[in-house]
Image (cartoon, rainbow, N blue to C red; front, side, top):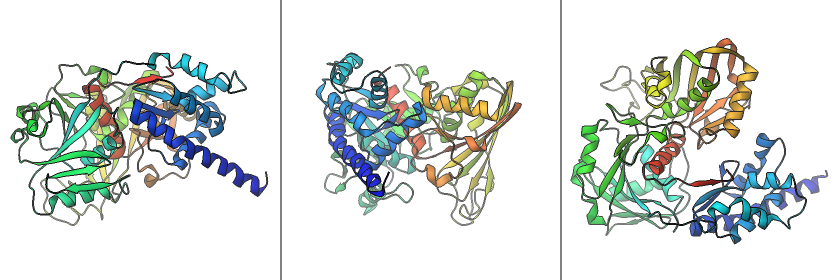
Length: 477
């Protein structure tokens, strides 16, 4: 292929991706239809991201999916009265082109494949969400909720609750939402309504409320009712503390973005969200590390069985550490985070058992905080009940990441060049680094990357949807 043909091919793909964007936006905003390509979301995706999503199809089926092959499916989808569902046009297109050579039957094919979503009754009322705290996780949750803004959105961010309220606080909070040193600028516009103490982001009106205790707020004053309060402060972790939220009028359920104490259910989305019942009013989304390792451990245990193991977390530093040496109540954490590796403890290994009881008492864990601001790694060392090899284990994990019910939690890379910064913004709970896998006989060691901020926040959103009964029909099955 000549140089000009390469350029022409690229331009055709680019123009096709551009043509997709308005159709994808209207489908979500007006009908609640989220389009994906083999699990990769196209909602608010750039032209380059759409092209990349198509290139990744080769990993799943061994061959390319060209944009000119998938575009007719987006067009056909936009003509159907489908509502409130997730549609994988990648799978639909690949399956269709295996048996067809022209576009004439695409609309009929789509109507048949998506029959369950056509004229689907949209009788689920939108639910109010309050973010109690607006730190690293709070702001990323806000971004994730705002990106889904639309008439069909069922998960609506209504307010954030903060302590204090000094002069200029509102603008500073808005500025932190606009700009992020790790995750980059906010995708859209952020305005401040000083008179009404609110932030308006991409048309989402977010009431800013100041309170020093969870039971001090009357949400009904702000027309907020039956709300899910997401506590991301980390201050209250037991039923007594988190139960204070439920004393505030307008609040009906509480989700903690940290490991909970006592009998509160610790949920890892994709693994045990089925444990959530309508009667559960306080739930924990566990920790970022627990979310990263539990799906992988479940996959390995399902096939090989785990006799015992150890999890060592190489974790980016957090706000709980000091920038320079200073007093801290915890051991070692008072030493400068950007200048030291700091050995500390983690409860993630033990917490796995709350989501995956079959592993109770089988895992130990420790953590080393390192001088990076985001993206961590879990090194999982296991003694298995069955023998395996590096190639066999990697092939199984690759298939798990591409085809299994855990495909939205586990990603897989065979790159020999990937480093932590490449994983910033990953929406997966964990990413298997296959090149680092060690396996011989009944001994195996896995290296799992995870964006301990963004990937975890995506998991939290899944738990939020489950708590509120906002499950989405995914097609094709």
